[in-house]
Length: 141
Image 1 (cartoon, rainbow, N blue to C red):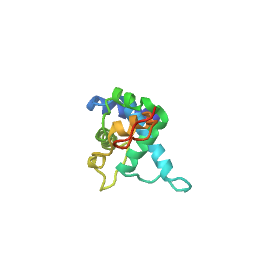
Image 2 (image 1 turned 90 degrees about the vertical axis):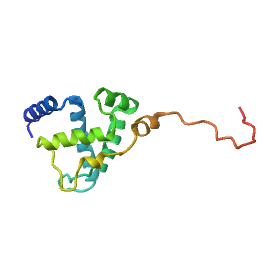
Image 3 (image 1 turned 135 degrees about the vertical axis):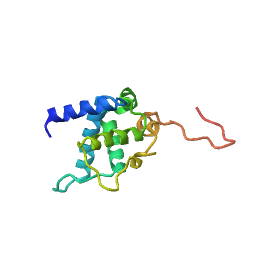
Image 4 (image 1 turned 180 degrees about the vertical axis):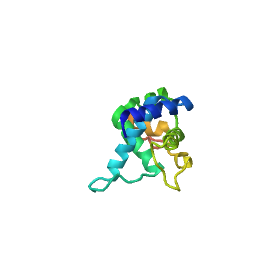
């Protein structure tokens, strides 16, 4: 697909549905490519269709790789605050003819995928250095 054509369609999507920033759509396309490449690892076929759950996992991995501990802040800037937002972006791209879907794909595939705090902040929280203290035992310094 020509970049100019993609940009024009993306402009129309954003004019129609301004909930998400342009960069969220661009990130989703990159994350989809990342997910498809991982699904094809070692195989020499065309990229295969990925499910909503596979895409969410790819989004998580790609975001951590690209933005590290800043992923939540970046998503917040783009107005993407839950997995369902990624589903909305995907289906905006599908409705515009930029992505395809199967008969079984739906927005519900993105419902409750994962908690953003668990997925994007928890990996960067410090690990507790001491073992949990058993009840009745003294804690050592």
